[in-house]
Length: 80
Image 1 (spheres, rainbow, N blue to C red):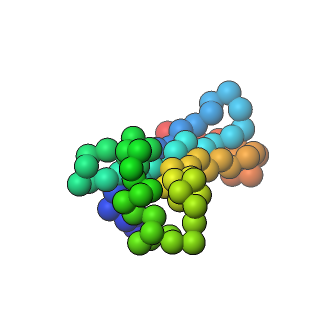
Image 2 (tube, helix red, strand yellow):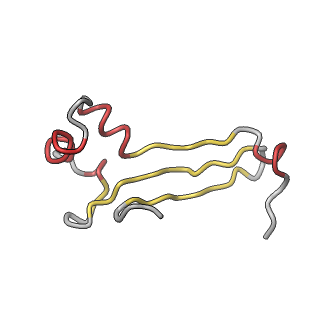
Image 3 (cartoon, rainbow, N blue to C red):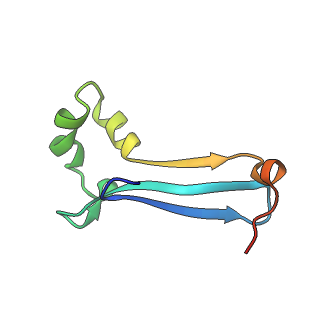
């Protein structure tokens, strides 16, 4: 189960053999925006959640892409 405010968007690359969860984003339900849309986000949350990280590292962990290379070669074509 994903934590509240964490959103995954999935996408296929139909011309190739790659599938990616195109983006993981953290959404602030309080502010109604994604972390990347709030310049103060790291200032508000980093010290409490990940004090050992820099602001840049913290923001990178809040929004990223996961790519599976050669997905179709390993698992076959997707079914509708």
